[in-house]
Image 1 (tube, one colour):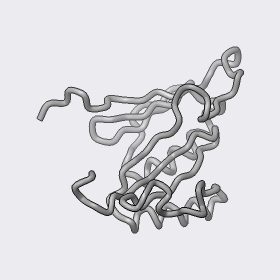
Image 2: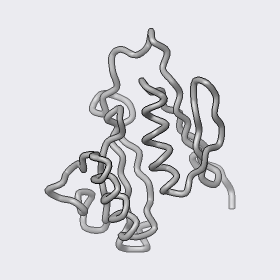
Image 3: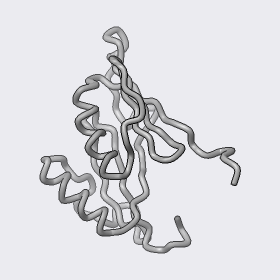
Length: 138
């Protein structure tokens, strides 16, 4: 099977690398990622052929702050193998005091075919974890 078009990696510059590592290290390990590379100004996490990179933003580029509603990246969405995984991660997020977005529509904020949880990382980037209820949609 050709890898043409498959996402290779995403690189995100962050305001506080330590806080980012704490949050994303926990979440990505729960989703099957492992630390791929680490250096003073960044870290990457890999799952199969795709990896996510987080790099400390230089002081001179930190303003204006990131906001998901501005032009640019709005959110990252991850597949979950089952509703149980979504429920487990949701409970862990709540236990960590992380606000669940769209609580009034949870777990169907993405529609009736996607059992999902939406939340924010420490930079307030939206994250989605979705288990499709219909296998032909995956």
